[in-house]
Image (cartoon, rainbow, N blue to C red):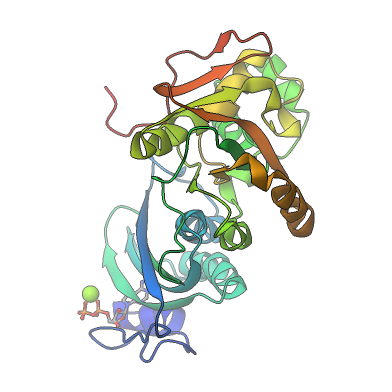
Length: 320
Ligand code: ADP
Ligand code: MG
């Protein structure tokens, strides 16, 4: 099978919205008149973002989910994407399984694959994604106001605990405490919060998706919005699988662990009822976890106001 057979068999799909999809030098897109495009890219590299033995179907899901999550965080509606993939060898079963995971998620969100690149090399997957939103509706990182509530969707910590379990950081007692609870699905199969992002237009003053850990990611909102943030640790919606783990591990996983791909957003206190109703409507927990203040940086405190995990920040690929 040649590179071109592979593309034709697995990546060329009929498109309904794109004027021209896979097969030419460029795709042709006609954005909805009056809409803005939100563009983002995220790359997954073997050994850094996933383990070498990862199930290809799950990898297809994750490669797209992390990109959809960026659109969600901006309040954009998914439209098109490209897929650039480096493969060490041409294993058709692997590609077929990858596509199963990738297209199931793409189809669920009306997202069209319109192009990409295929090359031989160390396993690397780079997706670029485009969504649409009305001008002025994007939920940026620079809109948080002093006094805003800080909210988070879903639950936190399970993906980080799955990484701890896989990398040998949990002792036997820790592994027993997990008691077979499925943390690994939270790591491999994150759910991009697209519907939530769309519903937060006009409500949230700032938002981002938690990929590198709550404290570190929230610090991006603080920097861009020139404000500080206080998180109340006992309010955090820690994933139920972590309940029997030592508190230090729960804190590290939920506050500084990444990969949950939940949304963290800020909103005026006057929006609490609306957000509670939205949580019911989406069947998705939305939890008020803290407040934006005029201090600097992000601080987590316990019930008595004592600092939790001082100095901890999110993941940084180039940290010393
Ligand atoms: P070019 O030589 O112009 O870069 P390619 O031969 O790389 O074109 O690709 C041929 C067509 O297949 C293009 O339309 C390209 O966008 C598409 N394509 C290549 N790889 C992928 C992929 N992994 N997923 C989707 N489309 C792809
Ligand atoms: Mg090419």
